[in-house]
Image 1 (tube, helix red, strand yellow):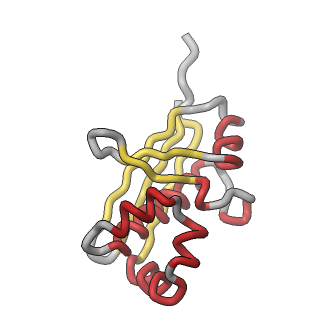
Image 2 (cartoon, helix red, strand yellow):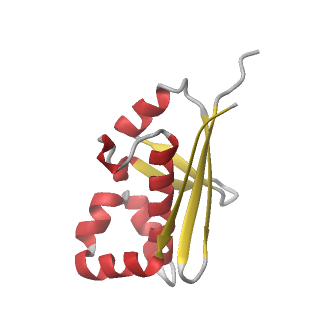
Image 3 (tube, one colour):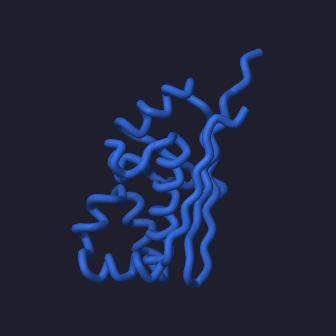
Amino acid sequence: MICGIGIDLVEIYRIEKILKKWGEKFTGRVYSESEIEYCQKRAHPAVHYAARFAAKEAYLKSIGIGLAGGVRLKDIEVIRNQQGKPDLNLHNKAKTILNRYGTPAVHLSITHTKNYATAVVVLEKQSER
């Protein structure tokens, strides 16, 4: 049973502007060390930062809160499994709020083009058998 869904779309040029203006001050507040390392290794880091930002926003929407809800973006970490599929690793309040839903499965999908990055998060409550 789906108990939450969130989607977000980010214009990559906006993340590029923020990165140029704020650099490490921005990335250090929003991204984990492993996210920064991953993005910086790419030919166009802003694309990957934007995709991760979209995933963080989509997660917040899936649990029914926004940026003002007290969850730090850094506590919503995009990771990749061994096959390369994106997943979320949640920390602190981001994880605590999810537990209110009975610890559902979290599904994440990310995509990007030259100009946009988007992410969808679906929370799926496990059926009780």
